[in-house]
Amino acid sequence: MKRFIILFFALFVFNNCVTEAATQYTESKVTTIGQKVLTENNLPKEVTFNVVESETINAYADTNNNIVIYTGLLNLLEKDEELAGIMSHEIGHIMKSHCYKQTFFKLALSIIISKITNQYAAVGAEVASGFASNKVSREHEYDADYTSADLLHKAGYNTLGLISALNKISDKYIDVLSDHPSGDKRLMALYDYINYNYPDDVKKGYSTNSYKSFLETAKTTIDKRNNDSKTYEKYLNTQKKLKEKRDKAAQKMMKTNDPWATGYSTLMLMVGSEN
Ligand SMILES: [Zn+2]
Image 1 (tube, rainbow, N blue to C red):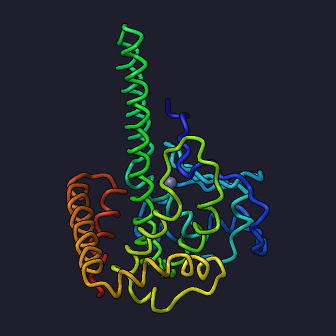
Image 2: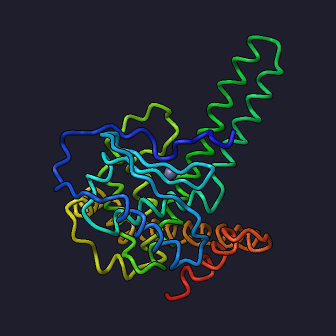
């Protein structure tokens, strides 16, 4: 079971339309950036960063705190912040024990299904389990994106690096499992989170073509939000509720002795405190 690996980052398939200059990040550079995020956030250092030679555009974390990134994805990254963003997203999964939760969840469901003797009921349960587990993994993706922004900020990186990185891959993967949020929705949710919690980053902007192209695509939505008072009110409310939910989760985690949980709680106390 321990070796059971859950892919969190979807199966990204290389798309020839991507024309960004390829930058090679070695395993040692990936480790340096990953460890910097851990150190600056007072998190445990026992994470292994691995680079795998493959054109697959993918990265994932497993239950043994290994983070794996494929060269197909690395080659699309131009800046340290983008790489730090991807690493922080995976660290976010480790911090919140998403790997364990999903493994446990799927195991529990498979036991339930195996106990159903009626074949039609079994088919129904399997379909339902598919939907339920997909919903769990979608929520985990959003959660890891927000946590990534928090980790990046505390490590001194511009949080927009994650948007820039995700925009290069979000509409280019073949979503075989159908359990990942659609690219546009996911990027907009992350942008809103950053805009609310780290407005200075948004003011500063980000120089990559990828970020600029995201802004062009999102312009109508952002303009509407800023100019329509009802939409703006809704955005403020959503972000306020999200912050409350994340603060509550952090307080719960603070009560445990898990060093990952303590690190996360400390991080959450910082979110928004500078605004
Ligand atoms: Zn993920």
